[in-house]
Image (cartoon, rainbow, N blue to C red; front, top):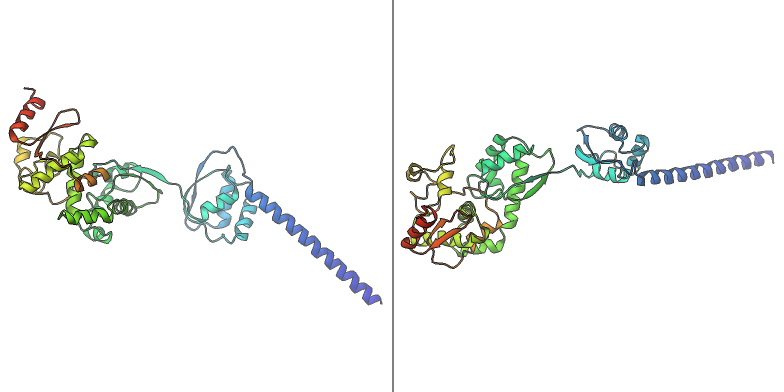
Length: 340
């Protein structure tokens, strides 16, 4: 009987202990859950937080607490362990704030939602200008960018049938992490070009008996010649008409592209110096694009206006005077260029 009473008391104590442990565990889980959903500081500003390669959970947790992103490194570590995310921290630069919940913070740093920086590439820049723009924005090195974009092997690996990526660095606003390499930027820009240049456009290209590279080349000339966006299809029609008639394109921007260290002043000597890009001297299109055209210039190259124009001259107000005959053109030159 004595043994039974002792055993009964023992099991009672064990039962009570287990109940207390269960209750304590439940209370802790509820407390941890509350912690995960409560911001450390609802009024906190966003900060830039860096996780270095090789940082452990405890290291990251302490840094987060020291920066005021979370209120407790210990609770954050336990929460991450319970979520089985301890080994999923991604190195990188993050935009974090104490106004975000620990649950949200953990989601950001385990999914690699790094801080992104904007890079806007305007229409009509050439490869070298895009490279300089990227370097100025803090993305890599200009020379490395150009070297990658001029690598035939890299170009081919991206599915572009050209010797360089001039013309295929699509103008748009992009967002990249600071860790992005020159090749990362280029891949994104070329990928965007490939999205824009649809299968319908490729079909249209074949119907016109052009290659994609030729259309991109023509579009780049249209881009550089255009001051007024609505004129793109008309300018395109002039170049298409000239190509059909076997006439030279006679485009100043192509001449400029072929001049090394152009000083901004095109001369008669420039116009009469033979280069692969001098369309006053060569017939047909130059060997490749002279800039990176936007969507509207690509579309204009594929769908020119229906005109008989074969000349145009700047009216010095961003628009042009278009002519069908040399007589009309000469009259327009005298009026708009020579003020006669």
